[in-house]
Amino acid sequence: MSGFMHNWRIKFALFLVYFVFAILLNSVGTVISLVDDTFGVTKLQASMLEGFKDLPIAIVSFLVASFLPRFGFRNAMMTGLGVVTLGCLAMPLVPAFLTTKILFLSVGVSFALVKVSVYSSVGLITDDKKEHASFMNTLEGMFMVGVLAGYGLFSYFVDDAQPGSPVWLDVYWLLALLTAGSTLFIYFTPFDESAAHHEGSSLAEDFMDMLRLVIRPIGYIFVLSAFLYVLIEQGIGTWLPTFNSEVLHLPPSMSIQATSIFAASLALGRFSAGAIMARFDWYPVLNVCVLAVAGLVMVSLPMADGVVPNADVTWFDAPAATYIFPLIGLFLAPIYPAINSAVLTALPTYQHSEMTGLIVIFSALGGTTGSMITGAVFEDFGGSTAFYLSLVPLALILLTLFLFKRETVKATA
Image (cartoon, rainbow, N blue to C red):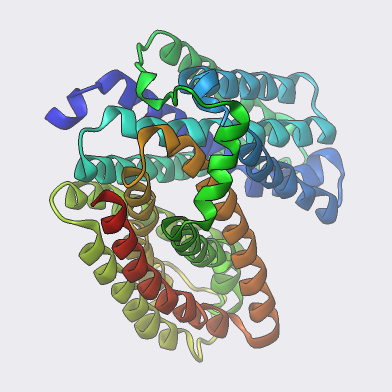
């Protein structure tokens, strides 16, 4: 608790911002299912919302990451929150599919500003590597809490009796209030960012420094580690509802609800890792986590073989894999925040925003690649084979973690 009380206002502000954007970012699947009836668009048209959200995250991160220390992390967070506040207000005031596309475009652009600012700020408010790793895990845990809160929030505003009713748009009044309130909280929160400034360099030099990070061993080994991790998490997270429905033969609503076990496991895993990382070095902890994930995959997927459809299935007699496989989230959870923390603490503070730009870009690429590969294998070879395939990047992560640990030791020697 004493660690949190140090700089507690800015730490709380970072938690709040991440919580808000978790709701907005992960609402895209829910909104896709709602705009079909409300605005009369096809599923193909609705699926475009994913691109309106994801592409701006990668593009804007690439363009502005090296510039943000000059603009100010606090200013960037307030700008991002201000933009999405306007987007949320537009949804109930001008209800249309075009408005929805603009909303997710604003969410993608804003999250690029926010994630680079939040990650870069962590190094300014923590005192050592263990506190940095602990805070990063807690921060990402708060993100998963926001994901879970978003599911409940949107479901509360949906009227099942009127499938095409626009009443769900009223959720955006509440979200606008939440984002506006977050903006005000940050505005009144003092924050010293001077350590992030790189004196004597030009904007062009800062941008080139970001590109040079990729060709340094610590840079490209880290980028590969992050890419592989997000490939696994996104591939499983995106296709788990389909796995539950087509392989485990759960009803559609139950398939979606069962996916929340994975999200809850990720949240619990990151909060737990926040405490563990405060005491132990990240490298042995992550090796144990990777081996535990592989073990759960090998144990749970055979349970999915030969499941017989049951029209009357309930939570009490659902296949065991329904509950056991999503628990891999407990052990997947610490990997991403810990490697992000390790690479950031191995670099000077003024390079954190540049490195975070690369984190965001390659995370987005890994997520897209993971979803596409898993979907292709799922369609051609079945869901179990698609999830067994996660053992390949897991094995590669063990190798990259070894190489990455070696480079971080060199960088801080």
